[in-house]
Image (tube, rainbow, N blue to C red):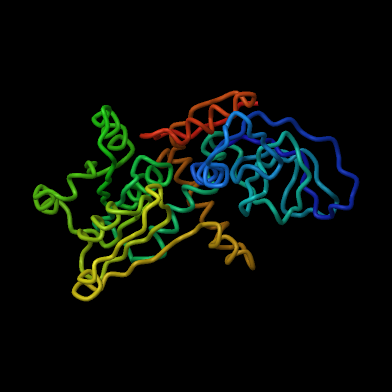
Length: 325
């Protein structure tokens, strides 16, 4: 969600840092905004001042490297390997181990938004059920960054998606936009509780996998539509309500309820890095084939960053906020 042209990549941070580069864009994530709101819920966002550890995503360009650096060179595009690197800054010196390269011939916004949402979508589709072409996935928060990535990655694999969004005045417009990127079905939250779901399942099998980014009643409704021995994975809780699992879902359908946090996944994989590298290669291949695009982004000048923070917590938000330097 940011374009940060990072200045220096050095393995030995005791070396004298070379001159910094000049970045152009920064960005905000819904999880970051939720964190700030939970910590400073009574504060005026206009008074918040960014610090160097704000920002979990971004793309940077290497301008110079230390003599011990082997995997990166000037001109490479890089993204953070872990959260908390601090991407809201104009320049920085980082260890080679903090960053991983991405192709510099993909769209800038696609590179800037690659490290969290597409990775979350990719892993959830790959790690919890053995999905094959013709299978079905159901998800709420389908208009979110993760939701849009799920739609596109699933479509590229021949997997059908049932995409649930809240009702809104521009529902038809949103539905058309999600269908255009590969959604099989787009329905409103209340439809989950209506008989028309039976008609929908005449056109596709019941889902093996449910992806929950909302929590509360929405998550419970997703569970109701899973096939026997299916899995629901929770990766977010935008409703700020607990996930309630009916006893019958566990006893009679043997459903599995799991959680996923991409930051922990990256840390677990850090011992070799191959899985992360392979995932990025697969995602970038989809981007180059135009099968995976960046979510809709709003561009806000860095001097008005507080507007981006406020916009991120507005209802019915379907776009990311990119801060322009």
